[in-house]
Structures are given as structure tokens and as C-alpha cells.
Image (cartoon, rainbow, N blue to C red; front, top):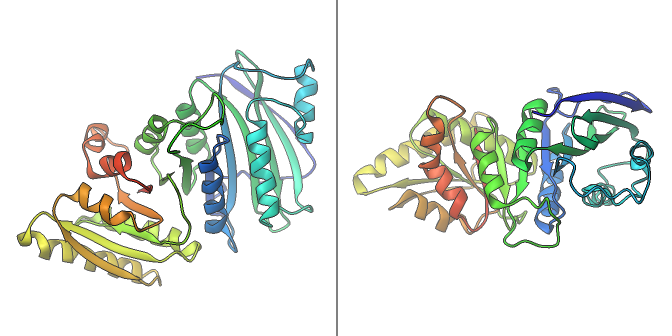
Length: 328
């Protein structure tokens, strides 16, 4: 673990991005088109609500420093001007500009710069926190870490986010050396104890397919996603798979339990369906028509990694054509 110490230069007080009075979303940015589609979806989830948003770019320790010959202390001071070719700055600046264009970041928001020294790295961690008069915050964080997955997980644990979103692009673009690869998304989905949305060809308008089985963990996950979907007025559909005709009553019971739990939250169901066959194949095929496939997974516990890597959730995440949410 890298040792970090913090120094703050503030123009106004700002709440931490993970403050639990607010719904908090972490969006992992790597410069790919998919990461900006994920950001746009995060804005939709947070629009008209009390949501806080953090944009995170993770880079390896001491890699690719490009300061144009400036002393690093001067470079850090100039981060607020967004004028330097430091690793990740272009990607974060594009995300900030997108938030301004979408009307989510206003000119009247207070601005605060924070820096953390990191042993073995000349630039360290740097972030800019914007805070509105209503107490909402947007944080742009350039973080150094031994690996991208490690950095995302560290930030997720520190921020205690309600939702972590990261891209899984179909192909490598010119996003740079810190491009988030599919294996990173899988590690984060396995290791993080909260809800993770892996964005793959993410489209906004086709609703969430909530895949449920007849157990309490699955029902809790369905309720959790229905609450998230309701934040962006995304319709929710229930789906369960029976291996054969004899198991259809069990699948129907799962739908009934999930419907009851979701309706108790004041959220309506747009449709429901039972399919026959292999659960992974059925979910992937049915899920093609939706923005997000939602599957449940266990929280961290002894032996859970072995369970998860052989589970329906992991196989759907690995093989689906579109975005997958691991709900916990």
C-alpha cells in the first residue's frame, strides 16, 4: 500500500463525495467513449436528486509524467487551470466539460483543491471538489495506485459509494496506457462489496432487466436496483429462469416476491417473464433488449470468491453483449 499524506487548498468547504446524506456515484474515467457514456448515465441517475458524483482516473505509480518542464509543485498549483498534459488530466477535463454542458456543474459552485503525497511518485494524488449551495458535490480525482483495479477498490471503500460505474469497452481506443481493460472490471465486480455497473455499449432508454431467483439475497438486490432505476425514471422488468417445467412454480414465486418487495418501495413493474433453460444463456439473450442486465452476487465472505467465479452473475458479466449491474 502506498503511503499518502494530505494537503488541502480550499476556496470553500466541501463535503466528502461519499457523505451518506447523499446518494453517491463513482464513475471511473479512462478517456474511452464508453466511460463518457457511463458518465452520462450517472448524470441521468443523479438528475433532480441529492446525488454526489466522483470522476476517478487511476494511473500507475510514476508513469508518463509530462509536465512540460515545470516543477511539480508548480504543476500541481496549475491543475486548477487544466492546462497541463499530465496523465489523466485530459480525460477528467473532458468529463468536467461534459458536466457543464449537461447543466450539472454550475459556475457558482465552490471549488477546492486537495493533494496527497504518495511515496515513490512525484505527482501524488490530486483532486478538485466542486460544491453547490445545496451541499451536492462533484469531485474530479487523479489517483495513483499500484494497479487500476486496486485504485478503484481503494476509492470505493474510502467513499462508501452507493454505485460504482466503470467501462468495459468493446475494443481498445486511443484512451492511453491506463485504459480500463475487461479484467479490471471483473476484479472490481468481484471484490467491491457494493453495487457495480459495468458499462458495455450502454444505452439509456431501454430499462433494467432484474434477474431474480427464489432467495432473499436476490430479492434484496432487485429492490436495490429498482431504487436506483427509479432515480432515472428507468422502467424495470422482472425475469426468472426455470431449468425445466417442474421448476416454473419456483421461478414464478421468485417473481412474486420481487414484485412485492419493489412495489412496497412505491415503484411499479413494467413487465415480468419466466424462461426455460440454462440461466446464463437465457439471461444474456433476454438482456440484449435492455440497457442494463441486473444480477445479484454475494457480499464478501469466506469462500465467496470461488462461489462468485462459478456463479450465474460472473458468467453473465463475462459473456453479456451489453451492460451488467452486480447488485448487492
